[in-house]
Amino acid sequence: MNLDDLALQLQNMRKRVALLQRQSEQQKIQEDIELVTDVFKELYLALEEMQVANEDLQRQNEELSNAQQSLIAQRQRYQELFEEVPDAYLVTDPKGVIQEANSAANTLFNISKTFLLGKPIGIFVLEKELIAFYLKLTHLSDRVEVPGWKMQEWEVTLRPRDKIPIMAAVKVVAIRNQQGNLVGLRWLLRDISESKRTQAKLQWAEEAMRQALVKERELSELQSRLLTTASHEFRTPLATIHSSAELLEHYRHLWDDKRQQIHLRRIQTSVMHITQLLNDVLLLSQDETGRLEFNPTPLNLVEFCRDLLEELEQSDRSQHPIAFSSECQCTQANLDAKLLRQILSNLFSNCLKYSPIGSTIKFSVTTANDRAIFQTQDSGIGIPLSDIEHIFEPFHRASNTGNIPGMGLGMSVVKQTVDLHGGEILVESAIGVGTTFTVILPFSTNL
Image (cartoon, rainbow, N blue to C red; front, side):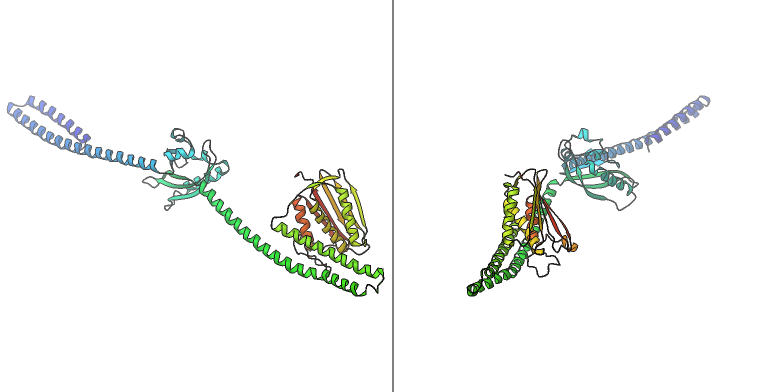
């Protein structure tokens, strides 16, 4: 029996007593006695029912009190667990507005709980990831009808108050009511910035090791090819030297000066060729092992070029006239003289090697905007279009070089020494017409 039933019964009893009282006034005394007896009986029954109802109410009160105590204990336990979670723990509504937050969340976002509650979690997401974050949040709400949806995980960059952004691992769990409707979300956020940095370092170390192994393998292959190619390339000039030296040894007393000079020039040309090969091999090897240095010093561009041309004309025995021109706003430049000599020597070597005897080689040097511009132009065999993109690769030789000697290292050396200057090299060529190389080197301030 509940309180409403008891109140109704008391009301009915009052009506009954009032009715009996009216009847007692109209009936005889005997009837009054019987009515009074009936009244007491009904009163007794009513008191009995009231006693039972009172006991029921006391029992219900005890059960309600126990339930409240249990709920308080569970709430306290939940709050303790909520606070003891080492990671940031949030409870939000389905739209991501924060309703509860533990101490770890306050620490993560560097903000007190007072200012954290009622704020949308999105305000702590990095701007460039904000759209993607809300798309994921919308996707969570769209999946509310999926019975198997329990937890979603992803990574997001957070922006704590007055601190640098951090990378966080996110776990989101749905909160549903008894009808299965989505009423909230539980969020677990963990700072994984340090682990990401460690992972990045490991990946970098692995990549560096892989590149080192590749570089070591390439260097080993290069050394092997250098030995094979050099041994083959050195044979011809060495054989020429040996042959001319033997002929001079046995027959020079029978030859006139002109014939002796022919063999002496062959020896000198072969020696120059071997010297160029050794210089190229040494410079390429130093570059591959990281020992090639860039040491710019002040030099006079015009004087440097004239001295180099004089050496080249002597080695070429004036078989190719060289037309030199200079238009320099500033003749002084800070360049590495040793590397510049390698660049120009290799370019001229190709001009002389691949041009017909008697054809003119054009060479110019100009300066503009603190840059030195060197240009060589020949009337030689030219470079096929399919080979131009590969001419700076080690050991690559154009398909039309035929039996013309060479290791395929010269242009690779030129490219690497130009790169050390921070410059650039351009090439224009046509088959049977000739080739023009333009080298642009900025004046260095590294003195």
